[in-house]
Length: 438
Image (tube, rainbow, N blue to C red; front, side):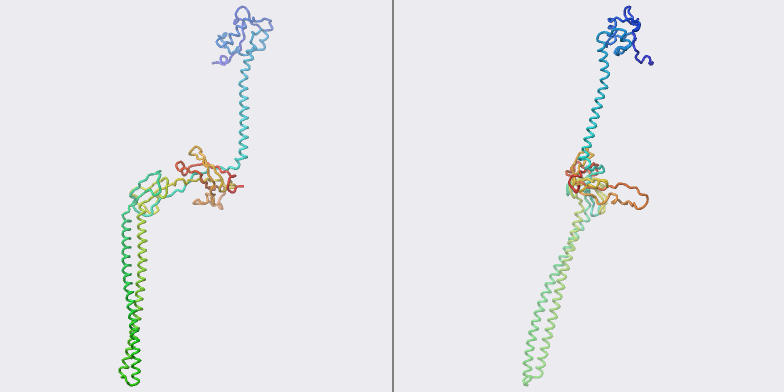
């Protein structure tokens, strides 16, 4: 379509377009279009259903009459009102836009005022970070003994109760060790009974030795008395020399028998002490064997690996038939209801953070669900200090990097069925509440 055909043309009534003999001429010629014919042309051009005049659309007649032509003919009645209404329709969209812009500006200023007021009263006291994650005290389940895994009755992500069987190690060798330890204890108990019987017999020997000493002392007393009588008789020549010598010999013999009985008593008592010590030693050995038996029983109990607490299993790597060593990683278990948040705040945010302050945790996994919490503690060092290779800024080029410090936040309500360790969260801490904030 050419530019001339696509652009609306201004209508200039010609003599041929008018019905009858009247013609439209410029105003300087003094001719006037009859009013009835101009009205017919106007109504035909402004009607929504009327035909166009010589190919001109009706939109041409909806425009105001040019000022040059307005004085050359008399306009029909109502033409000025039509023109004024058309101009008002053209101006109404611009007025609506202006009103909309004014309303938008007013809303923007109101929102800015509210935001500024919120920042002054609340926002400047709230420290936030999105470098925060849900944590829990994961327990790594490992065997205490070695052996072949016989049974694994659990699977990943399974919820278990405390004491529930997680894995079982072949217990044949450990059962034999328990039986052997028990038999050793029984053998030692029999040995203790034997030694105690020997000690009882030695006690009787001690009593016999004591009785022999009494007899020896009585013999010594008799021999001394006999020697005294013989000595008196020998002084008056009523006893022979032989009898006197015999009395002396009997006295010496009685003294020797007394000394022998005393020595025998000392030996019997010493043997009794030895036997009593042997009894104590045997009892100590029995206690050691009993401990060994208890340990064997414990090792037998360790063949059944059980859950230490209620929780959810994860990262199971053990399979039946696998040979495991003490301390090998079998699986992990996350306890129920022991979740907390570890928020890594910048060092520039630690000036007002303190334990006891209220926190609001937004969980990303659940569309920002809010959970209340409390600042529990602040790490004594930055995270880089606990790394395997801490940075050494005293050498090489230096680039200052803002450090982050882990802050532990205790959750008021930790729903273990929804929370998972490692979830990303956003933490807001109100430094005005609790703690040592000023």
